[in-house]
Image 1 (cartoon, rainbow, N blue to C red):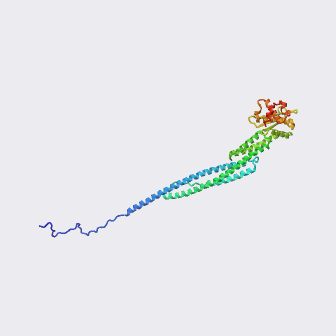
Image 2 (cartoon, one colour):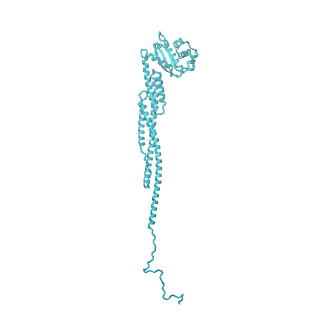
Image 3 (cartoon, helix red, strand yellow):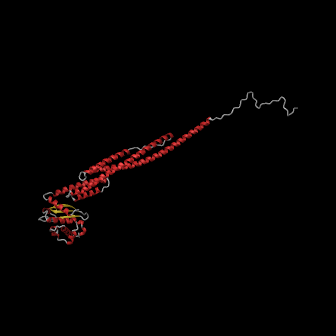
Length: 398
């Protein structure tokens, strides 16, 4: 019997592992890092691309916004310069019409030459402006997708914006030249019109035998021409009307002189001039016939005056040939003074009673007396002596 606490005789300490082969040594375990680094690198690249894409988009949007603002400013400037250029070209066309319509009757050469020079200057200014206005505004195009495209287009938009700024400056530089040409054109054109209008008065005086209607048309046309405020269609029309009215004055005078032609022509014209001298400011037209108001034969003289209360300042005096035959007798002058008294009465309507024919005739007689023509041919023989009150009143009618 063995002691349980004593070692066994013949016992062996056995290994925990039984093997017929040698036991391999234990190796430390390695971490596999290659795939992890690849993923991280991919993430870094992706992040960089995303940042580049975002930056490119922001850069493009900013460039596009700035470009759109520049386009808007440039287009506004173009619109202003275009409007000014169109106005200048329109005025130039009408100014050319003024020059072309001149027939040498009323327009003096100095005014015409000045306007021609202004037209040339305006044409040059408009041509220069058109050259700038023809400049093209580049289209921005569609927004690209990729960052490298976005960056490239952003740079191009920045360059195009600089070009638009330069174009806007060029357009702005044209404005002073256009304004100066417009002013010169307007001044020269209006000077031509007002000069022609003022010449009309002298032209009228040079054609005293013209018909009243022709003279009135000339005066109206001159008033419209002198009232012009710009070189436009109405200005061109006003000069054309003035030229036509002047031509009518000449033709009507020629017709009147043809009717009065004959051995009494010079005396007739002297009598007409005398009558006009008595009533300055009253437009007088004359007709001559053998018998007027039943008188003219057997040494008698006749006269008849027509005037219009609603259109004062004009009258038609008809005289018998015998008035010219007896000219320059005192009796002839007295009869003419009576007829002028009728013609001028429209200027003094409130000085006498014009409700009856007798009162009207008494007034004309009184007016002749107040002018110093006391021969009975002044109306006394035909209508009797007028009241002294009429003579006194007539003295204030001039």
